[in-house]
Length: 342
Image (cartoon, rainbow, N blue to C red):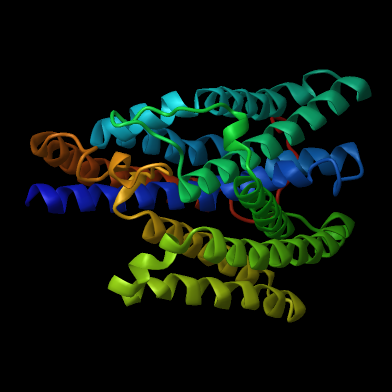
């Protein structure tokens, strides 16, 4: 396989890892975003946490794998991203740790105050992580100022412009909707009935922000659609996304919540596909000078490194997928509170 083909292959594999994380940990984060608002009793809050309890840590492996693959396959992009967004990554790490600690610590003490604190920590970690992911995506689309060596020159405030914030809010509503659909499938009774209203609200908010973000992207980032002219098939991602958005309320109205959740998964996959199609061949786009962008051509490792990593990925990925399938199958059905539950 040629060096160019290996570079493109690893760009696609990074997309697969990112899409897998967004779909799987997306509903984890969504459950956390809804946590202070939908569950009304301690039992319902425990049900909420236990719905993702056996799954969340395995889902985050996709993010860790994405980071490791980016470091090994495209070290220049990794260096640019982690140096330029260092503060954001520290906040993301704090948010993800907060979620994990909240899940483990909440039920250790039989105190309403103690549990209320960790409930809000669970929400804050989930919401902050989701917002940061969205803001990072918005900055990747918009581009950041880079010098000739790929170093970011700017401050945290430079990363908090209107477009990235808009994408961050869009991501919040998307994951809230995704998490609500998942939680509906895992619960029953009054808790489940209450979730139905929240699913409609989150879908409505997402739809509004989705339309605003689409218009903003077309107006502010004309190059986002440039690849569609050279590769018309990439526009299929946009078509699939619109069909998925439309199918969610149709499915909810007809009582097909499972189909609505599947449509939410397809929606996230198609949005990640649109993101990749808009970026290609850039990994980090320079907003000040196009030539300073880190691409899959100037940011990749050696051909030998990419080839060895591809072999390792081909061996390891079946194990990861098998593990995920077994876990989801083992914990299928409605969530129950047991002796060792959170």
